[in-house]
Amino acid sequence: MAVNNPIYAIAGPTASGKTELGVELALRLGNGEIINCDSVQIYQEIQIATAKPTAEEMKGVLHHLIGYVSPEINYTADDWANDAGKKIIEIESRANIPILVGGTGFYLQTLREPLVETPKTDKKLRERLNKIREKKGAEHLHKILQRVDKKSADKNFPKDYPRVQRALEVYFQTGEKFSELQPKRKKQPEFAERIKVFVLKPPRDILYERINERAKRHFRNGLVEEVKMLLEKGLSDKKNALGSHGYRRVCEYLHGERTIESAIEKTQQDVRNYAKRQFSWFRREKDVIWLEGFGNEKATQEKLWEMLELK
Image 1 (cartoon, rainbow, N blue to C red):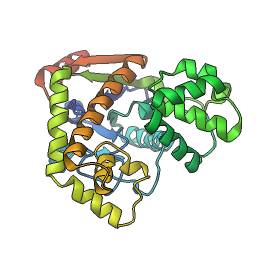
Image 2: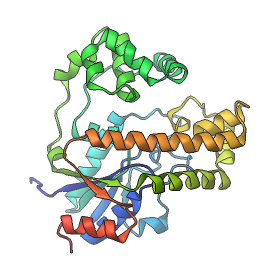
Image 3: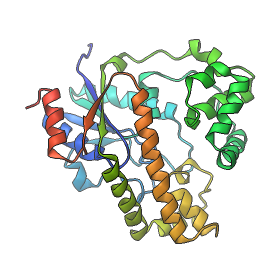
Image 4: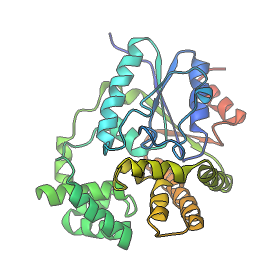
């Protein structure tokens, strides 16, 4: 039986209140279920700096794809899109409404516009490219891509390193230009056109204050101890799970590469820069609807209810 109901996505920068708005939307609808769209919340065992919703914050709403991937696995956007697609079908089979909640724009884009089928990532090549990016900046990778695949480079901003880096990986692994593989893109899922994306747009100065305070709180709440425990269990700091904001800087602190004060300050800066990139990402996405304010504010919620005629 064909399903024509809308699927909602609540996106936006980190610390903008996406979780609160997603939960309130699910409750307002009465039959909403939330699918996590955050690339850090998917992992098991890493908790403190992930902003995973607590049972209290979930308010009885069913949540999916949270804390279900081993931190040993370098989980990809394509993996998530496959899992999220299955969850959408499962939720709609119960006559409920899927609500995608999270700020990982690449995940959401991959769900709506599936990736080109490419070879499995060469981990050694990725590590080399990561080192180049860390030493010379994302713009340097973009210059390399300009030389080997100009069409791909022209489609991506210099700082959009996930896409730039993947295009380089494909080229150096196969000798084929990523731009020439585009026609081989996988078929778009039936539900893609039904996804309505709402993006939170809070005032940046207040957002950055929240980000700074949240980073301090994570360190106060035992982030260093959590990372120590994971490293002692044998988890490599090269894994994606420990490459995220906060975790990466704690690893550097534990390796004696920076002080605890520097780790906190650098984490704050990293997350503020990430928020800037999220704003830039969603400005490029097609058919998104911007919501002024934070997701936990009544005024923002009321705007959404009005748009969706849920008054």
